[in-house]
Image (tube, rainbow, N blue to C red; front, side, top):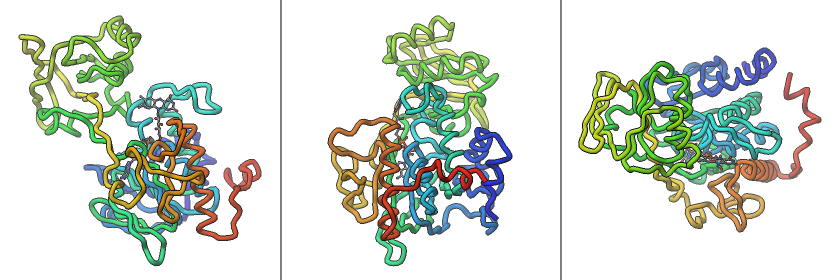
Amino acid sequence: MKAPRVIIRDRPRNEIARAFSTGHEKGLEFTMNQPGARVESTAAGAGPDTGMAMDTTVDVAVVGAGPAGLYAAYCAGFRGLSSAVVDVLPEPGGQVAALYPEKRIHDVAGHVGVRGRELIDNLLAQVAPFDPRFLLGRTAASLAPDGRAGWTLGLEGGGRVRAGAVVIAAGLGRSVPRTLPCLRPYEGRGVAYHVPRLDEHRGRDVVIVGGGDSAVDWALALAPIARSVTVVHRRSSFRAHEHGVKQMYAAGIRVLTDAHVTACHGAPRLEEVRVLAGEEESTLPAQALVAALGFITGLGPIAEWGLQVESRRIAVDRAMRTNLPQVYAAGDICTYEGRVPLISVGFGEAATAVNHAVVGLRPGSRLAPEHSTDREAALLS
Ligand SMILES: Cc1cc2nc3c(=O)[nH]c(=O)nc-3n(C[C@H](O)[C@H](O)[C@H](O)COP(=O)(O)OP(=O)(O)OC[C@H]3O[C@@H](n4cnc5c(N)ncnc54)[C@H](O)[C@@H]3O)c2cc1C
């Protein structure tokens, strides 16, 4: 039995979106392979998913759950197509959720200013009535023609998504956080590279490592919530915007420059870190350490899919078609002359890609969708 339409009516939109994004809502398909993650029953009542080695068949496979990918899934649903959305990250939202969920975005059409997290929650609430299948914490590793369905997307660690069309909305591609050797053993046990939810750090001693905008932004955002915030930066000056750095000092946040973390201690979770600042070594209490050292990005496995790539982006035409039939690209992953890398632009590209995919999947269909204003009753009931 499909549940989301009932939920949409009964709960505030942001609440549904939050439940949807964390997989806590029964009846929504949600699969994760992160350690300790919950695996929910499928909406179709097929019992718990095993997650890793699962096969699924949909009309449209979307690679990437950033703004462009989520909106592509909405557009697919609006045209009556089923979709699956695959993302390497354990949470939907792409760069917005991973890098700046608390920042206000001012240039998304129709929003005077919207927090990153709120924008993603709204995208999730918007797509929820169409039941996309979310495969999070999963890397789309391969793409091969499939005689029956069109394409088979192979997932790292097992499992396949068969689809008639594919929309690649993979943003910057696969991004691997820069780290320090002493941090690795504590990944998931106190060491993190993103702060998806500030509230998780309430009452904690947090050490932030880095000297760029992210480090300063996290420090400012966490200062009122955490018990203590210490920024450890290996240089004497920050790369971040001057205004933020001034705010950080003005807020009384402890800042250690010319300093680096030499060791982490605690079992099973992080309890303290050793920091060498100049000649002086000290021990800081730390139940959380946020490494804001940047990311190494690249196309990752997508580079091997036989797509035409230009400057590490997928070349598309005006219909967002790649060189492969019924494979489209949208958002920051795609390139064409004059492309502007903005969220708003990615939304338009996702809509263009999916509506062209519809015509390919259902020859004779109209390219233009009906107006959503004519579908209000169907979307809300
Ligand atoms: C600090 C900061 C501030 C910004 N501010 C603004 C702003 O004010 N306004 C604005 O318009 N833009 C802003 N941007 C840019 C904006 O965030 C991006 O343009 C937008 O996120 C691109 O959306 P996307 O969906 O194309 O890709 P992304 O958001 O990058 O999402 C792509 C997703 O694809 C996933 N992925 C990649 N490869 C694979 C794979 N092989 N298998 C599975 N999943 C994969 C990734 O994990 C990621 O989640 C900002 C960016 C940053 C970093």
